[in-house]
Length: 628
Image (cartoon, rainbow, N blue to C red; front, side, top):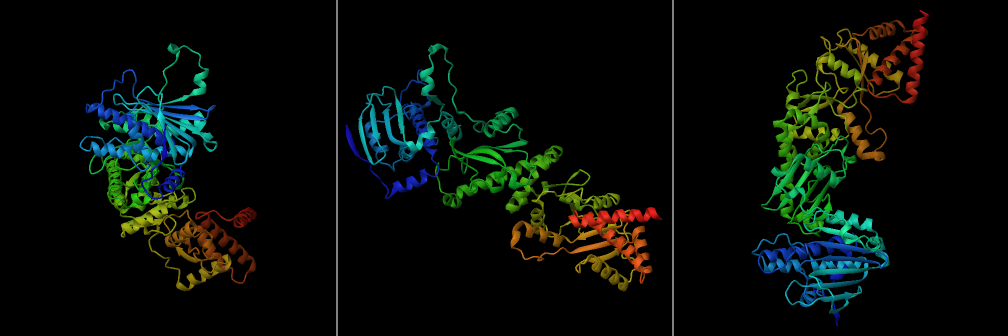
């Protein structure tokens, strides 16, 4: 038996390893299985190059993970390249050494891109859950002797002869008390499925306790199924994939039984390698409630979900898988932020998504229209986050009109009645009176009903400065006004008097009151809130919370009385005749308050006390009418 101390090639590397490893304890499963995949991949490559002669018919390439809860052991076994005694000393005893790096350097002129393991460093993740680790290995080389390596968690190890008789490596973890949770078969299965679900070598999980209970003859036992898919769909050419395969893969990976709308198959070989599939799920809700998931892999080895340095942030609202062999398995965020390949990759993905959407818009507008309400939050969010994305897609952005049509901004602006202003509604029920007024005059308005729409139109106005968005209750377009503009009978003095009357009655010195003949004779009064005032209020609610001083963004309300409406005419007559008559003045106030509340009801829900007074006043007015 040989004994010795581990050789450390980098100063203070053990604290660095510990910090990295303990950030995600279950990573040891990925690392040890990756090592096995790497060993098998190397053997395949050497066999293809004629440097190895290994029959696999009786021993097909596979990785077996065995869990023995009773003896507190987890065993990882591969039938790959194996190691000689000298290789164990080189790859295991010298911690910072990477077996994959040496292999790639030796065979750099061959196609060895699928070699991904980091045997030296990754192997030591086993000590996160094990108090003792044992390696039994036998090299594929003829005449090689089996080797056993044993270490109990410090820097001391022992090496001796092993009883292993088959090619490959077996790693036995003697699990510590802190790692006993990983002896649970279902937990271990979940970890393998998550991190290794698409590795290119079959992976089998075996519960040793169940095996001991099984007394069936070997002929009757059912062949076990691997936990992983060794040939994931993203590796196939898009031309060979069917819609059913795409949907089945989506359901399997994301456990989403609602089929995706459509998808994009990514395949790039230069200047970087990237394969993957991005799916568009239903996205009808606000982005903050959306749960997209883009899984990142390196040669079929899972790295992480939703790495925004690689994938544009707005694309994280989608679901998908991407395999990027040019990215290392373990990499810092600072590296990703400064790497030129990563930036190219992000731009490529964004361009492919925009091309897909533009192509669908041009080739099948009806289908695209049907998708719009599902995909619009993603597109709007992307436009806000990245100007280039907006520039690529601005011709394919749609708006749903109040009569149910889907139109582009260019199509909306072609309406001569509204010019460069796009009117919109945020609540069709609450703003129903304004919608009726628009419908009567054949005017166009669009629905913008999510909280994302307010920042979206603000950003869009900066991109398209000649375009203005205005909520349907923020202003009266000329098309709603009757001929004559302001009522010619309303003098400046009487207008000031009317405004002063309402301000005193409502107790609001900031209220603006106007008299205007409207084409809709059924509307007695409307309440307008300027677009700028409303947006500032919404921004203060969204970003300021309770930090804004009270009254900083007060409502700039304008009460417009329709001088063509009989109730308004009656009110003005009553107001003129009631001066000095207390009884008539009270009746006039009733009508004025009712006009105000009717206008306010079409603007927003009344507060409890105001609604209570409105109902009581309505009852009183009906009693007065009945008494006559």
